[in-house]
Image (cartoon, rainbow, N blue to C red; front, side):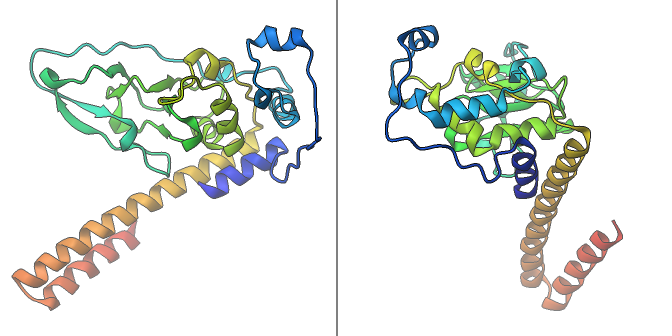
Length: 254
């Protein structure tokens, strides 16, 4: 994801951004009461400057990718595929687990669909977001996520934006509670997000897809290596090497 993030940071003008660091700063009480905040951290010049940069064209995350609200209702039998926060990977993908309907956790609340982007509302500084793959259409996710439907932004661009450290910093400023700090859906949707030009968007999409494809291939090769060990034990090292060569040559053909 590094190339995609760097490209987006560059486009946003914050790749090498150095905010001002005054020794003191003030804000009028009207501004504090307007946003319902009295903590000095929220009113740091760094935050003010960042909001101005990202909100220059007046768009918010909710404008470009509204929240999806499709309630999941457990059935009387069978199972479903469940996406929990622990299943999110650092490459922006998510791994689901199969859960029986009769054992559905109370936090299993929403359906997701292909192309949606889910982002964790809990401790957003951890940068936990994922793009829902076509094969995950109709899966169920935890209430610890906001499900976003990209309407005026490419899903890969939205995913990359939500994972940017500067954006996660803004999310973290809106968290409440100390033991289980979380940002509300409304606060997340209200955060600024500028429109991204087509050239940059295409480059980010290509970088994200390449990164995820590489990770998928690495996972497949790891499984092949495990199987090769089994073949070596059950048959011979020569048979194991032949198996690995077939796997590698097959990959080259693709």
